[in-house]
Image (cartoon, rainbow, N blue to C red):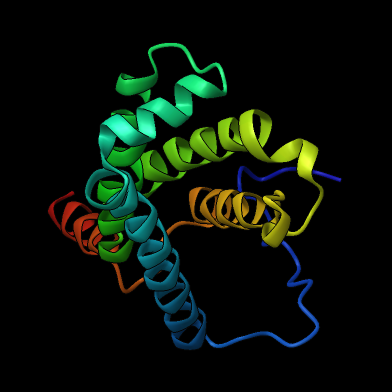
Length: 156
């Protein structure tokens, strides 16, 4: 086998290939729903429980710098949710959300089984994995990140 400096395209392994517009619409809908979930959890930390209340809970489970950690997590969830909905800074938001969900898994949910009704880990796992997917595949065509990438490509 010889190489010519170009890579052959990887074979499409999907059983039923999805048109790009459908894929991008699915990514948009998923980003919006994930963003709403994150905004709700961030809002809860600021407006419902308050940073002091959330900090007190964080302190009760042994998180160092509990009040500051509560504020950081609240900002990541609230602002990260907004940015996900917009599809802006998606790779950064994905990493931050994954880190927060890993922390929530190990500090709060791991010992409680799967079901969220028993304080289990299913919600943090799904949120973390969904964020990871956006970090791996990107936000899709219907996003601010894609618009900015197209503008950069047009200028190049």
